[in-house]
Length: 153
Image 1 (cartoon, helix red, strand yellow):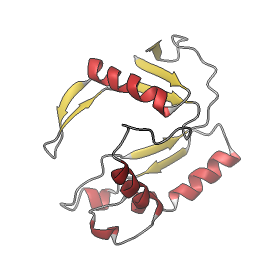
Image 2: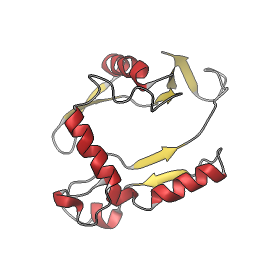
Image 3: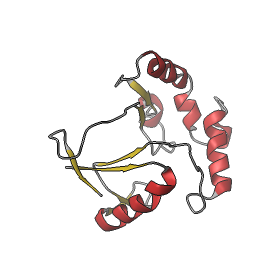
């Protein structure tokens, strides 16, 4: 059963999500040999995602700046990386925004980051994020209303 956490801001959700991952998560060794902790079926709904972001302690800000640069500057040469998310998202961003504006309830505003011809047939590092799925929802549902949501955290 999925667990749903609803918060107004990222800074409100962050400590609750970290605590949940610590308590309920499982340690996994990735194919790169890194230790990570993951939970499955954990949904976080944030009402105002841009408010108060970034906040202290959420990310090393120089790394966040590098990540933001990578997402906003398109480059086919990947600037020394095996891949860049913007290389993968590229023109898809335009169509996702267009789709959400035209059809706010769409379930098809999705960007795919997996490139089988590159990720399966080369020895290059593969992306950690495979898909970015966007939805606009007011979400009047309540947990345990037979829609698959578990209790609030």
